Image 1 (cartoon, rainbow, N blue to C red):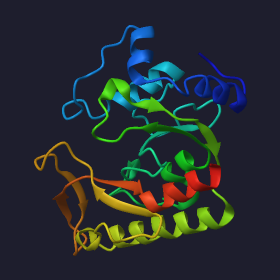
Image 2: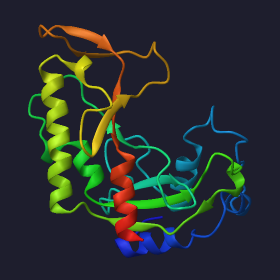
Image 3: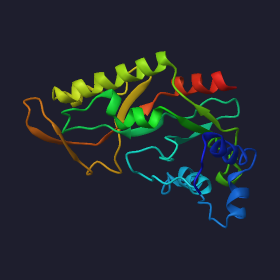
Image 4: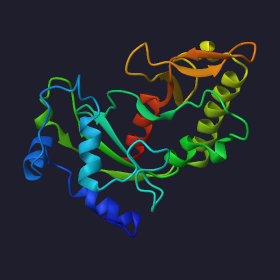
Length: 218
């Protein structure tokens, strides 16, 4: 469905709050996987389907007409995030002209619909419950810190030092390998400007940062 305003989208998302994934799956005749090892993305895809998100894995927000990105976030019963939140792939070559202001990361984080799900490991998937969704914009200070993290990573990649970036890099946003397996290699810039093969990387929001967003909201 096409939403005309962010409030319409928020109203639809908030209408899911309180329901378990099993209840929603039964209402929409969907099959709930018994475990998520093979279907890690199932919950996010199911919520995208319920809300009519259009972008899939395209490099644009999930609701392009509103410029809003959907982020499901697994939390414990105390409202604490259980993992870091994937944002987008890290560009590893063709970096000319890339800046924070024209980056996919910024486009995806400028306006986010957060959809928390109480999803501790011991809770069966069908019993995991949707908490109250909310809309969020980064504050000026948050955006400055995200921009700094992004630019530090891109500069390091451009200098051919991709191997120096580990999970400790970045204040709000870290970089981690993003690949189905160790054979899924991609091209990157090497130390002498040559092309090398390396694992794809992704930008992820740190749990401490997403916890501060949740704390602000609730």
